[in-house]
Length: 315
Image (cartoon, rainbow, N blue to C red; front, side, top):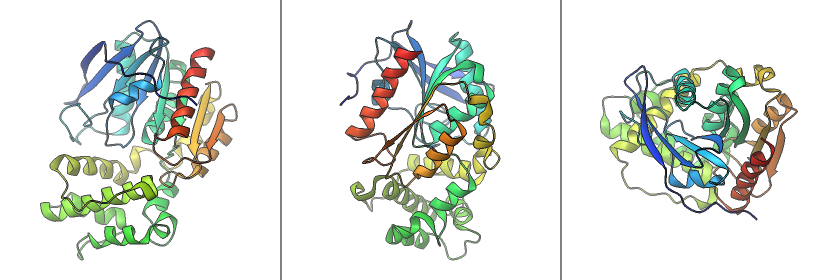
């Protein structure tokens, strides 16, 4: 069973200057003459971490990590102006051109996989392959699973779901997403942090399952900004049409693709990965019987490292 490669440090770090106010943090590690791979993190609200370099053989890969707009070390942190899906795609393509990379491998999980697919649909000639984990197609049905009071994952964790509902002001109106958006972007900072804390707890419970440990500690200002970004994208339907990804998979038929999905993924149920594989019949579909959503655990890490190693042999 494969494990993460040893820790490495970047050989270059810089900020990508965009046409907007956003400066996007970039780091490069591994072999500058190796196979270019860009790691696309999830969220949309998180950021890259040092361990993300370690999925790739540093002797074979030129490893590029990017903190998306408003995330991680990118500045201004939490900024929502000009922060949308097309802007992120533009940043990826601008970075490719600036690094003078003809083609690269896309490696992304959850929202990072969504972004990889959207980028590949817009720039298929620039993509040599894709490794996608925990497929999130950003459809209305995916949001309904995560946010619907009558069906979906709320029926699996009703106590945590009720705590999320109870965190919202009685005056809030609309569906749960609208209520969350009103509260977290409202003028009452205490109410905003209370709702944001329960939103983070809900996401943690669904992603981690029995491994989740709840804390009643108040959230930080940075946490609030991260939640606002996540809801900013969800409120705007991730700035794409419903079912856009599946409807435009014809552009991706020639791209080598490995889809890795945990059978016990409750954040992004396996159906999404299965639907994507049906739209991309050339893709290899790896179902992990003992894994969930996050990129941790022996089985998941083994599958991701193995996929990157195999791509290095094939590309």
